Length: 138
Length: 366
Image (cartoon, rainbow over all chains, first blue to last red; front, top):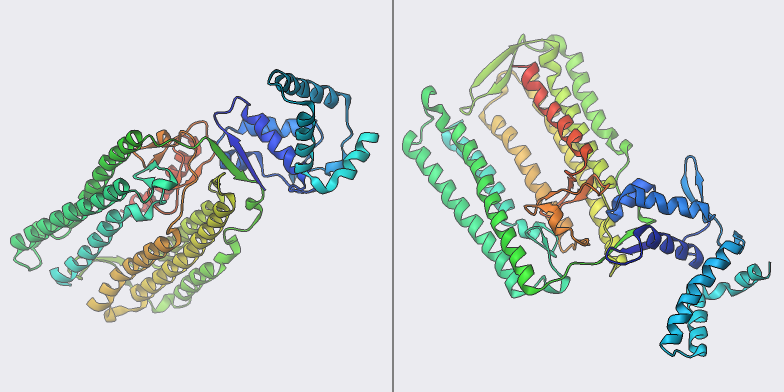
């Protein structure tokens, strides 16, 4: 699996890397139990500082996407195993609100907005809708 | 050996170095022009081709002219016979000096063309990449041979040293350890464990170097082009596996060669004649030429996944310096293989260790 980052983006590098890895887990390209490269080698391959990658890994661990194993390093956790927490709901609402506000300012219709949300959701993992809906009910 | 025999060997080394310097542009990744990254769409532009051709022409032109001048000077001074002791530097120091000067000439031309490439990039308005990518899975594959692949090398060393141990009593009391340019023994040492097993230590040192280079093939940074990641990954696989195999074979060749050298030194006696000494001088040359040719084949058509702002980190287009980069080994921009990130302190430690090992014999064995 390939991760790519944009040096000139406004989004910090560690956030970009975090998003890429979470997307990999959601889409199944990063499988449960798989090891992530060591902080040193990934930082070397991306040509960035060790601390940047370390920050991403700490964040992934904190959110429960990876488990830091003493020998194996960062190990990917199963995609469906995480609960939908209130913290996540709050963060999601905040981000959706910003997007919705901008869509409204640009007079994007509600249907298009919803359609884009749905297609983004499905494009990540189109075949696994059911497990995610199961997660929502919990 | 006559002056001509020696001259031919030196000439062959000179021509080999000249050829490698002249064809440097074809050893570098296709999208790197004298250490400057250019867009993939521009690699076959007329201006780019012209710059490459012009560099090759100038290196061959200046290099050949200089080489012929030095050779003619030596012939004129000596009249084609091996010079007497007081002017022997003409046949020994001068050709080596000429070789060093050749490095200077090609290096100087490279820096000049590096600046031209920089200007071309600026004037053409070529932009640098913004994105960069890495593979999370490629490193799990085995891209270089494991340590135990060097077991045959160790076996050769053990056989060489074992033979010397078993035949120790039959080895003559004085051993010729060096021949001068005329092929006449000029250093004869008394038989001792040091002189008998010296070559095995050199073998071990060579083995360590090859194991180290093989390790760097696996450890070096893996750059992936975000625009074409599959191709990049495939290129990395091919290139690294090939380099590792080459190190394995070249290492074996060198270790076997030194085993033979030791055998001739210890048990060759009077059978050591000019032809054998000549062959001994040529063998490493042939091996390096073969290595260069295989490397060229291996690196042919490869593209570098350049990073944003990377040009500025390649000093003079050839030396990588980036303090904020955690990579120690990086792919070369000027040729084939790997180089060090000089902005990383560990690189200097590695250099010091290698230099230490290489220079230690000079102090221990004056």
